[in-house]
Image (cartoon, rainbow, N blue to C red; front, side):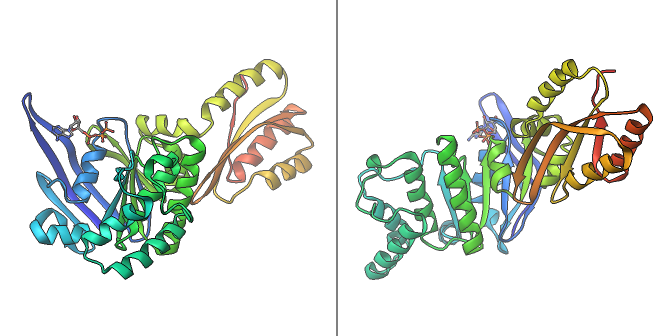
Length: 341
Ligand SMILES: Nc1ncnc2c1ncn2[C@@H]1O[C@H](COP(=O)(O)OP(=O)(O)OP(=O)(O)O)[C@@H](O)[C@H]1O
């Protein structure tokens, strides 16, 4: 669907050349929600401008739905860009126009007849949950409602790709979740391919199928969200994952539990996907005649399933406890002893 081949973008600045995107290869599939995450200056905005044809790569090519966006210009590029829509962190609405008129704007530009425009605007208002707000002005809306207008406007011309530029960064956590749910719903209902850039791992965790991690212009890690959460490879990815994984709380819990439990063993069990540790733990207790107490747990949900951590305290005869730990390892659960001794 979207293919970036060996992209390099070099800006000429007064201090010399600056490589904003460096040797990036990416393939984004039809209908997926693909996230690009990175800290400020990583090259995310440049990537999005390359995707919508606002910037040309210095070398390499950007192809969307078979059309080489990086090689066209003028009217041809303008026509192609109607199929690549975008929503923004600060919504970019026209303040002197009502909600309905904002949504209508791209339809006017595309030359859609008035009657058809009105019908389409009504459909879109309904789709994004703004029923009854058509005559309001942007200044009368909450942040979440403004972004709903942005989304409706972006969908007006039936795009093939929706680009989201930090679309929830200006919103509070609850509104962020409502907007992410709306994007997910639109992706499922319309089969729309969504590419989003963000610096928040929560956004990736909640709606993305795959993620690319960018650092200093390069994609340093890429994969299915669940896989990246389960086994982040790069230091920067581990930092992003720890934003949401509860890992810091788990470490803190282990420290505290080690103070409370002087005997037995503390075991950290990590599980991924639909696999659950509960039957394994009950089997372990039955087979090995030990006491097992779940003393800490955290679970996170991604688009491709849950992952989580349990801390279990095992008490009993030394050999039985040892055999129980072996049983966990043999049961395909990632289990490690986290006791101090
Ligand atoms: N038009 C430009 N001219 C010169 N340098 C630029 C230009 N646009 C971006 N850069 C530089 O390219 C690098 C990548 O910037 P970019 O905006 O793509 O990163 P980002 O990950 O989106 O960060 P942010 O979230 O802060 O915008 C930065 O060093 C930035 O200063």
